[in-house]
Image 1: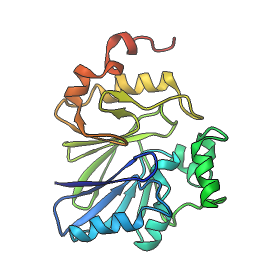
Image 2: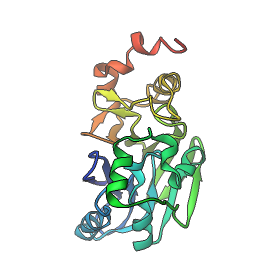
Image 3: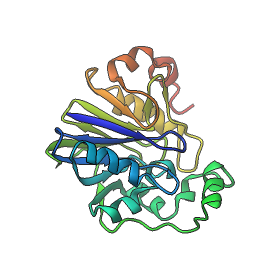
Length: 230
């Protein structure tokens, strides 16, 4: 499997580029914030490996994970996959951001006041299995960071974890639509039930594995998770 990434200029979000092998179709995950966007940086990777992008996967509706999806899908028409719960954020990103925060300041500096969703949206279903670019994906709903956060397995080898799980940490839950209770339930019932062998492709930072995180990540330990509801 070919896996590469573009690290966004702002917030250092990982935009993953995944294909079965060079010269084949590929999937783009979480095209984040560049100035003006990440299209040119993604195109360089696509050209390097002679790939054909066929779909964009959005793990959740925070601006640093979808900012470039509209110009990207205008440049190369393809479907965009996102959960129904977070779809509204494509047009209203401030529905899950704190007023006056860094994202709002960036948009003001960029002169951006309106957002529009891509032309072809596919709403994900929980535990839906589908094929893209010759790869087998499963979408697993994982609320907590946002209400509509989703993680994806790829060929039962990779886990695209978005901002649910990082190496040594997890995503914040204090923004609008986030929930600490939901996050703990997601970690306990949706993440810790996965195979230790899964390689984790997080929304920020470096790759890890479920096995490593099960042992080392303080947020996957019982003394944290058993506080569900408190």
